[in-house]
Length: 382
Ligand SMILES: Cc1cc2nc3c(=O)[nH]c(=O)nc-3n(C[C@H](O)[C@H](O)[C@H](O)COP(=O)(O)OP(=O)(O)OC[C@H]3O[C@@H](n4cnc5c(N)ncnc54)[C@H](O)[C@@H]3O)c2cc1C
Image 1 (spheres, rainbow, N blue to C red):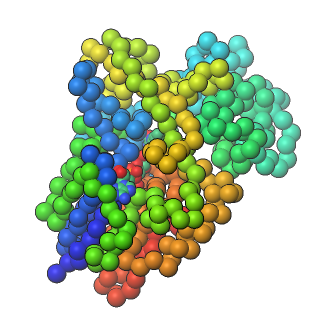
Image 2: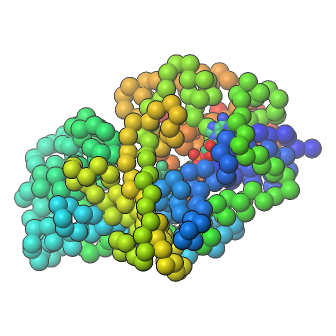
Image 3: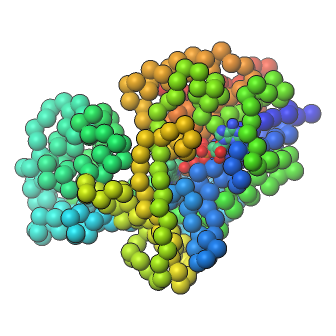
């Protein structure tokens, strides 16, 4: 007979784990505090317009992992989708990520790739060992492009001056010297035809899985299960007793319009005098659908309070030190594995979330077969 397993969180982590473990013969109870499945990937049709809304902000599926891509096709039909983001800077619209078109528009030039490379290189700052985000950006793109496209957006997103952020945030040269405006490099990119909630519902549709919504799991009940998988906040499992891990949250201001309001799915607004970072027009995430009305989100980042939804882990030095203390507590806990973006306090794209859940399910099955303790984390938080 299989184990009685508790899966806390009905997001992608919980759904993939539940599915894999149910298929392996275990009995899985999935609970979520919210009134819906799919966690932060949740999508729902707007009653007024029929538009499929990405409730917690825009989600585009992209991956280089063939196994993950094949896996999601089992549960949903994916439509081709290309993420093409625009940005409005001081009243002018540019293409993102910063590419040859952006550079030529911005400088009023008609440079070819190698000419543009030299042109930009002549404008970059000579900083041999950049330490901060700002230094890194100045070394990569120079002060003009940095001020227009990176500085304001980053300050609003993180609520701090980019000179306080580590250089590691900006790992690669964020410029393209061709006209490719596909935001992602991955080979596979698409949108589930009926939204992410339908994808997750199909994953959870298995006789070995029971789902309870509006249900908060109390960590004190961990020993009532053969094993608990916790996709909630790592610090939350320990009742925040060492303090709270810092996050940024997002406020979405919804507005509606007739027809096509901005002509694209995502328009960034990096200017310092605009209080939001971007506007998403949800109908453009499903270009195969047709709707007379439109639903849009203005996105305002801010510090996350105790009652807010944690979105982006901050992970600066102070948070990492607290994280190390919580990891030490977690290592001492028994009967629980911490999973997903909140359980490991990392920003995770959906494909990575799914990969880690698939691998963890295999590791759990192998550990049980060998009489060993299952992993404490789906991936190391530090
Ligand atoms: C604004 C934004 C945009 C994003 N865009 C993209 C994108 O374009 N492409 C991409 O690949 N990824 C994107 N992501 C990442 C994506 O959202 C995550 O990969 C995914 O949501 C992780 O799933 P999860 O199951 O780990 O976490 P979650 O979806 O957060 O699920 C955790 C669930 O646990 C529940 N829970 C917590 N504690 C308890 C408790 N005690 N009892 C019961 N339930 C509990 C919560 O209610 C929640 O539903 C984006 C993320 C954000 C924030």
